[in-house]
Amino acid sequence: MKLIVGLGNPGTKYEKTRHNSGFIAIDFFAHNHNLSFKEKNNGLYAETKINEEKIILLKPQKYMNLSGEVVKSYKDYFNIDNNDILVIYDDINYEVGGYKIRRDGSSGGHNGIDNIIKNLGTNQIQRLKIGISKNNIALEKYVLSKFSKEEIDKLQSILPKIENIIIDFVKINIDELMSKYNKRETL
Image: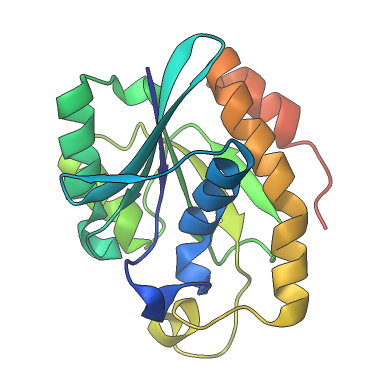
């Protein structure tokens, strides 16, 4: 069983904001696979199968800095190993239209990842970072701002790649996944 987590903030106020890039990616996948979400343990989740393996897509419904609590509750409830979790979230260190898969590491100042590391007790968390670019605006205000039309187009252009990464996460190990996708040119 695999747990694919998209990070974001709940509520319509935060829809289509930079910080909700993880939700956007999960929604794209769910839409393309005709999946609907159910509520449980402060999360919206959908289930499917890829290669006969059960996949749970999760959008934590606590605010970003508490999302690790929700991830931990799903990990425990479904008895999922840390190596079977992929977290998708926004990263200011990559341009909009860019992405990067990592095996582990620090939170890099991202409150959602920081809370997941705290709640799971390890930084060995596989992740997919979606670029949101940097700006001179205060970070908290910037990540909660909406994408421009041009940025939305760039983000939309990588969503099919992210869908493929999710599918391949089920089929191949993290080293193969990084080798296959991190070399690719991004827009």
